[in-house]
Length: 208
Image (cartoon, one colour):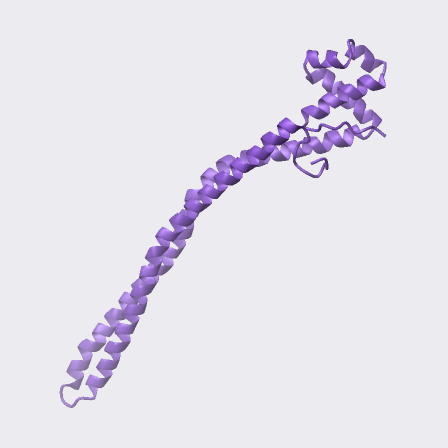
């Protein structure tokens, strides 16, 4: 966790909070993904019904068409018998087409409804978490880079004077402003450490 490339704090309390938030976010996403999968499976049942209707109706249409061909060979009444059989075969093909349409519609609907159910709650919690983590990572990267240079350490100390509570400033030095102006190295390092800890970095990196 000490690397600047990791989006995690090195202070124990903040690191614990970040890891806990990761677990909560992962659990939240998992729950809603499972809900989305359940919705998908429920709607996909209609797609399977459509497939069954298409398969059954196609088989019936083939059988009726074959029966019509056979009836057509009968003398005298063959044509009269074949017509209703072929008409029934065409009706079965229409039913097969309806089954195919049901399959296609239910397949797309299953995907869209699963996304519509799962995406909003995931984004509602996931996006703020991601933005906060990116913001933290950028700040951590910046303060670590600043702490590696004398001028950067001075800047961190100045920010600490402007932003940290007076109690913490006086713990570093009885006169933190005067010591900072005098460029007292211990005070500057201590003030910079305050700003580093506020950014989630526990270890003070010595300026070069």
